[in-house]
Amino acid sequence: MVYFSKWKVSIILGIVVLGLAFAAPNLLDRKSADELPGWLPHEQVNLGLDLQGGSHLLLEVKASVVVRERLESLVDGVRIALRKDRIRYTGLGLRGKTVTFMVRKSSELEKARKLAQGIEDNLEILAEGNRVTVNFTQRALVEIEKSAVDQSIEIVRRRIDETGTREPTIQRQGRDRILVQVPGLDNPERLKRLLGKTAKMSFHLLDHKGSMSEAMQGRIPPGTMLLPSVEGGNQAQRYLVRKRVAVGGDRLIDSQPSFDSRTGEPIVNFRFDTLGGKKFGDVTKKNVNRPFAIVLDGKVISAPVIREPILGGSGQISGNFTISGAQDLALLLRAGALPAPLTILEERSVGPGLGADSIAAGKIASIIGLILVVVFMVITYGIFGVFADIALLVNMVLILGGLSLLQATLTLPGIAGIVLTIGMAVDANVLVFERIREEVRAGRTPISAIDAGYSRAITTIIDANLTTLIAALILFYFGSGPVRGFAVTLSIGIITSMFTAIMLTRLCVVAWIRNRRGTEVPI
Image (tube, rainbow, N blue to C red; front, side, top):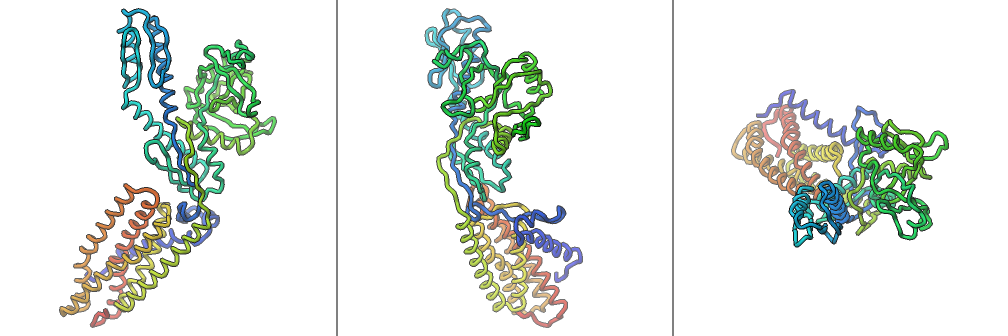
């Protein structure tokens, strides 16, 4: 019906105004947009790697390290279980991906096998003679590796997010690889340093009874390990550290860079969770006046002497840090330790000049397409074509506002999606206007022809756009990178074009026909 109630008009105009408000910050530079009052929209469209430049990394997760650690943990579990039940054994150790040991008494073989079976789920236990072999099932090994990659993706995401980078792309590629694209990154070397560190921190007591000279010659006492300090290279100081972890870094819940109040040197303040704080307090209470090593990725950051019990669940790490070094260490500890080391397989840097050329080319293509469509609609449909062109311009604004509101990333294929939307946006108007022409030829009055044109064409419009929208959503769900960028702009463009074609253009036509009260339709 050729009638719009006031509340419908208000909603249509309100949506248009909101679209203008969310699109407007894109006319400002980033600094000016951030300085806008909090109650005003200030988000801008995020440009992808191909438009603003940045860093592209392909990482490989060394999941075999996680499997090795789980097997070593399994060795310790077997040792504890056998000793607890006083079963005598020899040769307990790791051979490849299998834990093996010999039971001295054949009568205890079955008992030893059952004990090993109960240590962990998904184990395969084989007994031949007095030899028992324990290993993970193939399904368990695959699950361990998958979990390591999934956890690595999450840790990489946290570390990059902590740097304040906008809209990074982090996704799994293949079985054990991670694709990282960080648009606008001006310091790719820092990113590589952050992602290259496992950041597995732990606290250990030093072995004050062992001989350092003998350890340097390769005679390391059982239960200890010889670790270098972080600084010094080949001449780094060595520490004889107990293997047993006094407190694990996984109990950290916060870490922040700061400065020592006495020396003014950069430090890192850390805080444990409740259980970690209790363990830390117990260890420091029992070991006053003994050195305590803080180990990060197999190197000793510092080994301070415990002067008094630390019962608050917090402490500080000092170690001749630079300001940026303290910030990076705090960031790594907050984000958590990687379950396995990452290796950079491929590295590319995209300069902003290439992106600027792409944006310029996209602007030219959009403007040319827009002009051609505007001219065609005016020549073909007259004043109704002008209404369609107004709706098309509003549609472009709504797409820009939608991208800003959703904080979607605009890529070069996304620009292609916008150009495609320009052509598709007037398709619905063409269907309506041609239907109105048919109704006029059939002898209907202007109001009746317009009403019939919209009511009869709307089903076709919805069907056509809905099928395209479904295709775009499938592209977004199954695609990645550039494909997703295209799908995002196409989806937003379909939704906004349906609104402008069905509601906004119709409002303009109704307002014109009611004011002119014409006896014919100029179409």
